[in-house]
Image 1 (cartoon, rainbow over the protein chains, first blue to last red):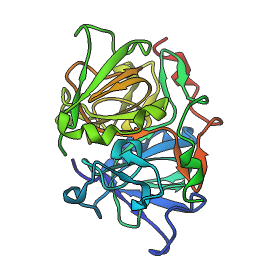
Image 2: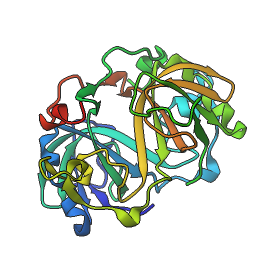
Image 3: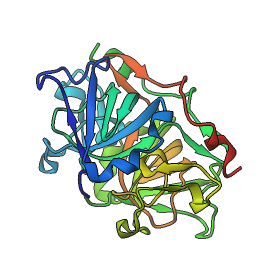
Image 4: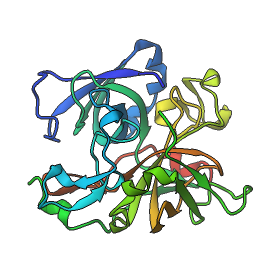
Length: 146
Length: 146
């Protein structure tokens, strides 16, 4: 797996959890043709490599934020960046695409993060969008980190 | 990057594009604790490695299905399995989880495909779900492959 580009932020100290911030995905110029038509999508998935973390420290289960009063869950039930494979994935709003640069809103990746793929949203099959409006997810997720 | 498990299908000749079919993700038993709490989610992303394809054949741009009458787009505006990095990602319905096995509906991956990550749906931040109900996507996607 090789980077196709990198995340660029105006300020390296931006709060990446602020999903209102616009950041850029700057593709290596050799991949620019891969972006043809992407501006027809309002949203895309950015797949990135969590290069600041190490798999050697993966804990398969634990309390959220390491706090005993928080739910006890497995890593695949979380978005923890410390995972068996250091893959990050975020659905973002595509604001603009110009040449090899995408301006996106809502990317929770640090400045300099390697990007490995971009995929359109939503998925589709046989002429139908696959979007999930109705879902079930644990209540505790809405209580943490407010 | 290493597999955490594999896709299992009842019949190797199943039409993987039939999103009604239930298949299994069988995790290596060493990762079973990573699944604690995952059954609280009705939907998850399965991230897999498109090991049947080769990056040496990547075309960054082209007509959909290679047909001149189809739209001409870049690879990142498609879900083509032949991509600069062979990452597949599909949002599926999680039917059941028992020990190291997930039963999922809608996974468009072939029997034996290596799975590299599982992530919960939807994304969230500060107590709010991040779901995208309103989006813009090209019309031609609803015309192809019906």
